[in-house]
Amino acid sequence: MPAAAPAPAPRVLVATAVPVERDAVAQAFPGPADELPLPGATLLRLGRRDLIAAGVGPALAAASTAT
Image 1 (cartoon, one colour):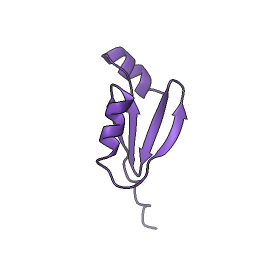
Image 2 (cartoon, helix red, strand yellow):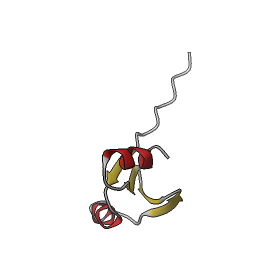
Image 3 (cartoon, one colour):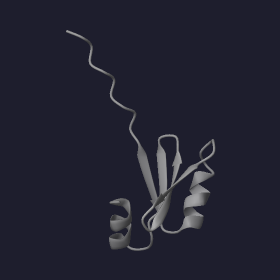
């Protein structure tokens, strides 16, 4: 029986309230960030880490991370 393929590396989503906070968190990780425009937000991708400014409040954060 052939060996199973290795599982893909997990991704980590970091949701902050505002873009300035997201950008400050991004500085903690090495390398340049790729910007991916999403409806209503810009996602920063740093390797396996995705950072998004999701807004203030649980409903807005939940809606922003669901896209």
